[in-house]
Length: 207
Image 1 (cartoon, rainbow, N blue to C red):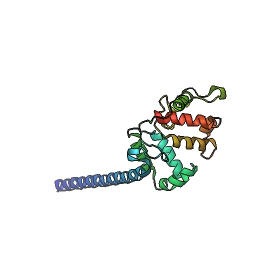
Image 2: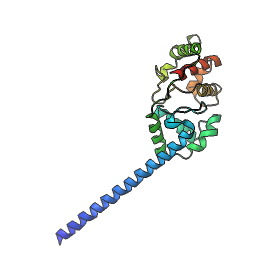
Image 3: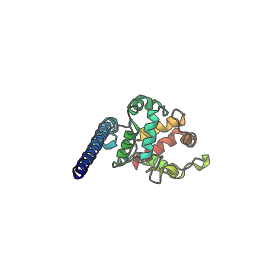
Image 4: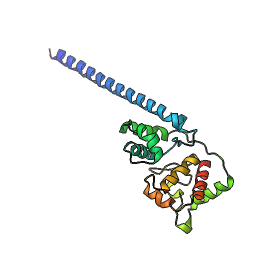
């Protein structure tokens, strides 16, 4: 009798483990399906694998995962309130939970970066100097200090290399005019001229 009881308990334990594994598999499948659906939505604007073909929408490919998470959360809680954020991202981000936010950031951070595009050589050279050395006469530090020598970004500092120049120009002007809350960046770019900002943006798009 004891052997029968032990055998029955073992069967129930196996069934329980199988049920638990099955539930986990189902949850994982749903998570993968949610990520696939979210990525499909993102690439409508941000391009295949996050490499955007429109200068209106930034490249997400190879972007810092930490930066992507911070920005998605800022869109969701509406603390990033520049006009484009309100128009395009508030509604999209409102549908994301923390898990999906993490997964999207991880997914796009692992995609191959968008290639650089050539532009006006003189403007690129001017922008490279500002990026690497800043503007000492105005006490403006080098962009490379935070964004990396190759503008590759790290942690909460975004990747800028290969980003669309029109997008960068617009965002830097938005920050300069305090329409987007970015206190550190505002302090750095507030004294740059529009021509200098354009030069930096053109350089960054080229690398």
